[in-house]
Picture 1 (cartoon, rainbow, N blue to C red):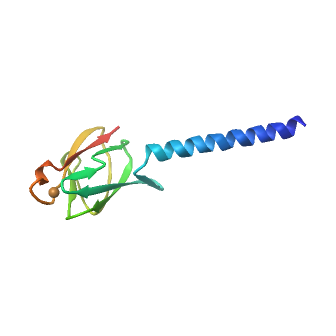
Picture 2 (picture 1 turned 45 degrees about the horizontal axis):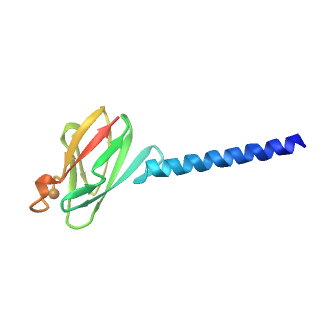
Picture 3 (picture 1 turned 90 degrees about the horizontal axis):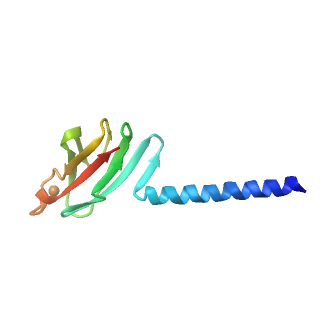
Length: 121
Ligand SMILES: [Cu+2]
């Protein structure tokens, strides 16, 4: 019964490939929720840091950022891409590069130090 063994082998192979792909994706995108063609990224904000503070996206990708303000109100401002996000916002990463972002809502003494980096690959 070579046919039966082959089917079992192929089924196992597909199963293993799916497990590897699924785990790999959840590790790579720990803070990312895929929502069709919009990639959703959740950013926690608190005095005086963003988490993650390094956000990597791909050029041309449509990005939705959802902010979780854990204490007072914060926002994200990426001057070079003209992106300003309060609570939630979408943008398309139009050019490759490394762009600094900062909090654009005064949140206290460490406000000026509340920064992050958006990497568009
Ligand atoms: Cu601030």
